[in-house]
Image 1 (tube, each protein chain N blue to C red):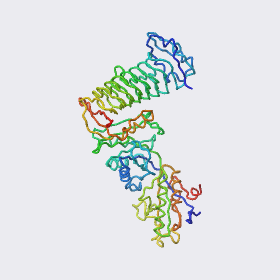
Image 2: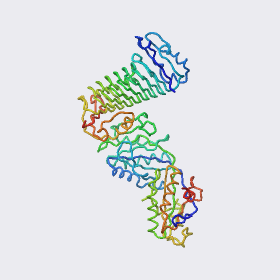
Image 3: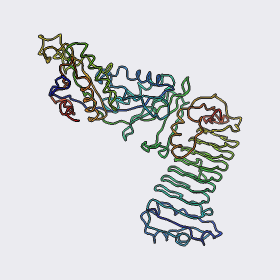
Length: 273
Length: 306
């Protein structure tokens, strides 16, 4: 049975930003309920006890569930390396920051900077994600460096900026500047791909399933079948992503760029949609 | 013991442990996947003379990693190093060169050898690596990260897995079909080969799955480590101590390699049962007195099973 945390009504009414880096299976598993309640949570400029803001049920196990409106709670699941954390409700900024393993399932919207500096694990966002999905940690040259992010809604601007490794799939639309300065990895956008996608991209793959604006720094190399994409499609379909009928076996226009740099990145755009 | 009038000798085959890899070759059509696979398994009948033993494994693959038609190949060699050497040569020269193909590992294992990570250099710096996280493993597949290489070639890209899994396998399973006429013996051997091909994880590395030049260990010539199986050569009756009963005019050998002893036993049973019938006087097996191989495949007990 999972450890259940329910946000107290007074905490939801609190007009202060909350940082909940302590809420992750790594810190909760193996602790008693009382120990969990004593974990530190930063609210505004004060450090509170977790039990003051969340009602805790059950002792600590690797499966943790949180209920409540956590839209003002930052860093949910931050630093998570194992186990499963399910959040039933919206979360604030930087959810899954520095995540290196395990599964973080967000049942609603996520704030900006979700999955920043992520190096492993699975982050699934059932709603929309804010700006700078999978961005670099402050001061770091690289963004996401491993793992998988699945977004069922739209994302804000600059998703996958400076991404180095891993896979991001966005079922909805990606805002402007997706894949900006991407270094490697794979970004799938099933909705509309916003303007400026792939600007300053060095390597990596952006896959788009609808027509989209293309920067002049990308060169058209022609349309080809890309059977390797089926390896991703199998996993994405199993995760509930609806593929366009033409996705498997279809031809993808391959544009390489950004030619103002090494130009080894690619945008693959499904033809005939 | 008799099956359909054919006497089953109370003897055993002697099989050895080798290292095995299993791969899936895909292409835009089954025809091209098969062309690549058959080219790859050419000249791979015996580790002694070819460096490896290889063959098509079972029926066509229902579901391949890239969703295209594909075939499965098993390849056996003496060590992981030898297996890597053979895989790099054969995938590089026979699969990468074949139109529209791709090549994937189909034997997840802790022990792996490098294949794509060697062949990638053919891309001359234009090769692209893609890594699939374990979280994206399709249902039913073991969750493991996979790295593939996309190597630009003149019809698009050759996609090949970075590393291939290696496991212990069993090679040298065999049985002998002793026929009253050469025609009857060959027909029986063909029936056996067809039946064995339906068993998964087993290959028949020799031409058509049948061996006519069975061998014994050693020879009168010092440089030869193996020579013709003279006791089973019908034309040498009278010249050597023949193992052939009266009336036997020809002998064919079926040699099997598999991923495990169980598979070898299952395939041997299926093959022997299919071979038995009119014109087949006896089924025997090749061994070295139990002194050479780790696995002894006894004919009668496995044929007695349901």
